[in-house]
Length: 302
Ligand SMILES: NC(=O)c1ccc[n+]([C@@H]2O[C@H](COP(=O)([O-])OP(=O)(O)OC[C@H]3O[C@@H](n4cnc5c(N)ncnc54)[C@H](OP(=O)(O)O)[C@@H]3O)[C@@H](O)[C@H]2O)c1
Image 1 (cartoon, helix red, strand yellow):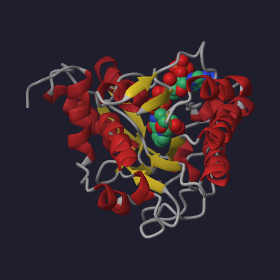
Image 2: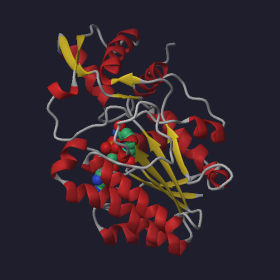
Image 3: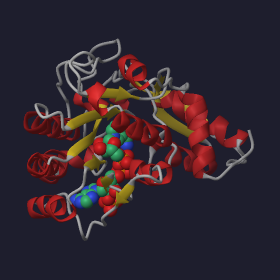
Image 4: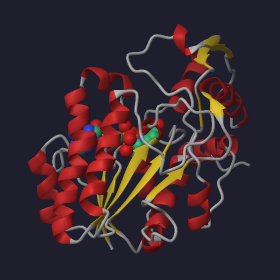
């Protein structure tokens, strides 16, 4: 199978390259060969490479910057998957679209089901939501798509909350971290494996016997605030020898922390149906985060 991976330099893209089975031919064009902000580039890459499947990890992921660069966020997160989907409809190829918990508004206090109405509260979330709706309209009937939503990717290679906090622990005595936004971290290496597992269960996921729509939710087990994660990162950092000391973490409220974009207060995803169809249990986020750090920093001790 020939898979075109977009966003291969990103956190998830790098994890996918690490866990990709040998039987798969993984195509990883650079930004020079695929600019997701450009229509021609998105169409030509499908026409030229004719992939069996696009694993679309490429995205405009800066949630705050998206508020000021909304056109670019829309181009990359909504239009790029649309243009690729239109070409895939012609070629018969499929797309596994990675999406986000930020398609929801965070106003409920129990986990979001995959078929719930979307109602994003920032530009990043609405651009990803629009991308989902575009490709669903183009490819759902032919069973050529799966949408895989995840949340709070961290612990892998590249920029992410856990790696930033790890570095802050070593530099600062105290850290102030938001404690009133609840969600769940996701180990990017586990998610990468879930991508390949989803591909292998394509027909089941696209069968109306299982899901109303081919939309999966995947994150680690449990729930956490950013504050909880910051505390855990300090402790895990010491346990794994990545830190000599950790900072004292102080909880703060969202209203006391300026950010350009609003963020959902609660964005936990209900992953039970996904775990069931894939036959895969999730690990608690703390253990999973430790495992991700171990993989990223090549640590072999228990
Ligand atoms: N990170 C999270 O917490 C999180 C949570 C939920 C869902 N997700 C979703 O998970 C997926 C992967 O996220 P991630 O954390 O791996 O993102 P990431 O680390 O920010 O990587 C994004 C990738 O997209 C590429 N990209 C951006 N603009 C591009 C363009 N114009 N043309 C071609 N490539 C471009 C980037 O390349 P450059 O580095 O060269 O710009 C990078 O390889 C995304 O769909 C994201 O929406 C992420």
